[in-house]
Length: 92
Image (cartoon, rainbow, N blue to C red):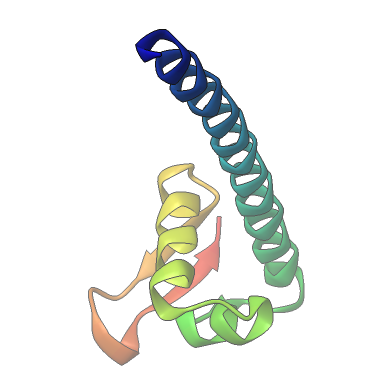
């Protein structure tokens, strides 16, 4: 009886791990697509602010900030200003 429970738990664990692994991969692809869209958005504008990205992609403030920070670390854009509403981003 205990062996059957262990086998069932093991099978459920494998299925759950496979499902979560695939979802994580899908999220990573979506993130890269959105970052590429942001770079394309810069083609029509010299300056972009966080709110532009929020509206353009339909994402939260935190997500837009995260995308912009990652693009800055990759050397694609640069932040002008330190904090607050006077911050904007330019394509390098």
